[in-house]
Image 1 (cartoon, rainbow, N blue to C red):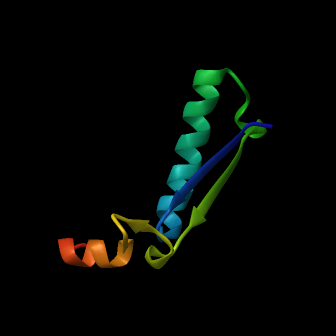
Image 2: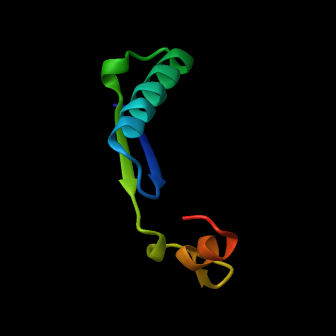
Length: 67
């Protein structure tokens, strides 16, 4: 079974459903494999679990004015 994984920050339920649907549809079309064969995992991570430039991503985003 093909497996698709996305790691990201918090995502609301409606967006997760759309991502899973679209990832599956596009991968099925490109690979010629039935949509029913795909497994999609969305792994949500807190911004404090990521770092960039030696800083917590939550701090970097706050400095930029992002959530």
